[in-house]
Amino acid sequence: MSEFNLIVIEFFLLLALFFFIFAFSIISSESITVLISIILFFIFLIPFFQVLNEISLVVFNEGFEGTLLNSIISYSIFIIIFIGIFLFVEMVYVSLFN
Image (cartoon, rainbow, N blue to C red; front, side, top):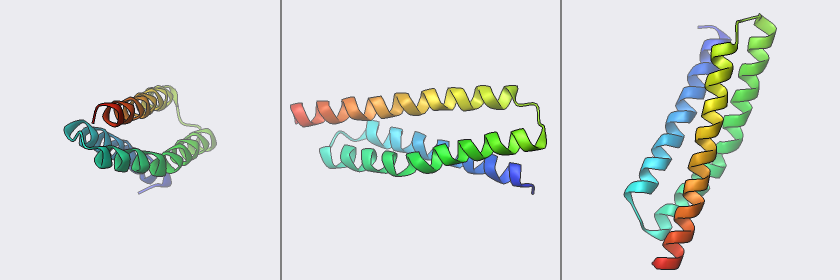
């Protein structure tokens, strides 16, 4: 497998991890579970953006057509922002009404 394929696989695995954290947080409404979800979200946020930088670098160096990949990256950033906002709102909700 090429370096690009490995980086894309890592990107999709991290994105799936964020979806799992999101689903785990939605299912449970305990304050400790939401706190764990937020902590895991922030822990995996830095590697996610590092993988995005690596994808951009490899696409630029290899000369690939990056329009589809750039759209996937931009939409994934919006999804990650939505998950972060949702986790924050859920933490406030659980802490106020628990």
